[in-house]
Amino acid sequence: MLPIVAVVPCPYFGGMQTILAQPHSHTRLQDPKENKALIETLSSSTIYQDYERAFSETTGLPVSLRPVESWQLPHHGKRNENPFCAIMAEKSRSCAACLRIQQTLSEGAQDEPMTVTCELGLCDTAVPVKIGEQLIGFLQTGQVFRKKPTEAQFNKTAKLVAEWGLEIERDRLREAYFNSKVLSPKQYDAMVKLLSIFAQHISMVSNQIMVQKENAEPPMITRAKEYIEENQAEDISLGEVAKAVNTSTFYFCKMFKKATGLNFTDYVSRVRIEKAKNLLLNPNLRISEIAYEVGFQSLTHFNRVFKKIVGQSPTEYRQKLAA
Image (tube, rainbow, N blue to C red; front, side):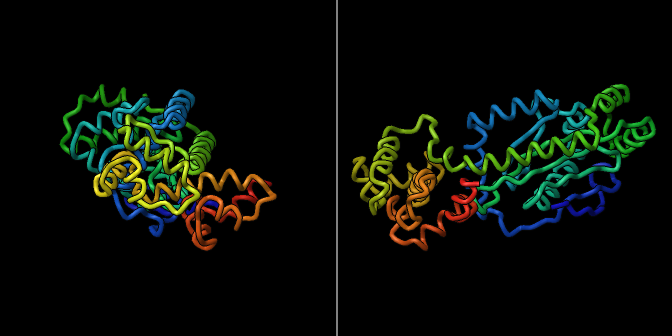
């Protein structure tokens, strides 16, 4: 699907910006804390850190995985941060303008990649990252020109910086400005495609990452996970697992959510869905058999939970495996 192009005022340099794709808000997570916890889990995973390193070394650009609602500059202090943008980030007024652009990206890239280009040609792109049907954040890159900047553009930039009251040595500003990365439109589009493919991959493996999350968790939580894994086909309850690890239901509930980032019911559902994904590899098993095998008492409930977590129905998932 080709993105839709619109032109709106650019808060960064006071000009106009080109916007690709239209905003949609129906998939946004409602709990910012949960949203942030999911992103932190994915960001600390080996697969993401390996990709971030490879992307930065290959393209020379920064890349960040950030939550839907974030009040921080995603690339500040990151590897390959644009030197000009780093200078701008030191000043509160220009920093605030950049944050408004991040908000524009958050609102516009909820279903498709979105690129914001200021009047002077600096681009930033956000690619949506989802877990099932839920938007949890964005892979973001940019701080790049899609054509070589000119002296006239720099002079206009320097004038705007002065109007903002920012006292920055002109030679320093000039050096940083012309040291900004330049990619051709074709190269930039290919880079956005790479981000989109990785966003899809994160979505595919995110459930597995969350189920297998290990960050020095208490032994009680490790035992609880083992108990759930061994008994996931049964109708297990929070109280039953708490008893199995010799603690109160209230304390176990609190500690389990803190350690995993998920409540007990959601975690059990994810374990069951991960098992179901493996069973769907066997074409001789009916979906109804798989649903009961992994612990769901209703095929309708299984279908609903599977689609919520995986982003497609069990039938669609199996068909893609066979394609």
